[in-house]
Image (cartoon, rainbow, N blue to C red):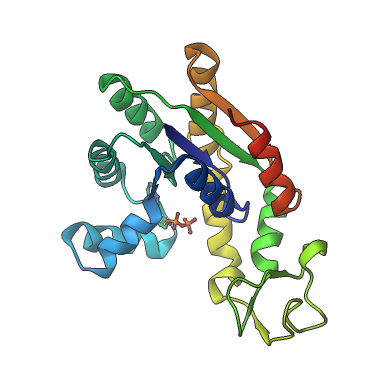
Length: 224
Ligand code: ADP
């Protein structure tokens, strides 16, 4: 089982991705996490990638594409959920080429749809509970609004993560994601076309504007 997941920063992609991993027992290959590991352990690749990551830019394709294709080639039979790759057309084409060359195909491609302004508000509205990272609080989402200025679950103190408040960085990432000509949405639509033709890939468009539980239920109902 091979799955791709697309969704802008702020769309709940991580949460829905976890559901897919649980359900199919596939490996999670998250490009951002792979890069962070390289940076953390100071590899040559990490040294090259670091400056781009810090600027919120894509790491160049000549580094990213072989790195991800190499990891995919080392996976076992269970398959994988690929998250954060591809993010542009070049990456999309190279992934398709590699899969076709290896006689593999994608089983599912999930695209979480969320308007850009909503995604930005969600990120900026996120609040962290001092007692528990998993207590959801967001000043812009009615279902999980904090209780005044305290955690809605336990009453703990709340704070905002600094990079969640960096509007310029959020805009930069969203510029790449919402670019339908050569960016991440272009990559998603490229696979949408392939899915419509190959008869093997199910393309799921998931409305990301509801609650986490609602999105989860909608996703589950479309898996076979
Ligand atoms: P974010 O959503 O904040 O961009 P990620 O954790 O997905 O976070 O990725 C962190 C960084 O790693 C990105 O900002 C980018 O520099 C790099 N990166 C991740 N995936 C890719 C990719 N497919 N192509 C190029 N660079 C990538």
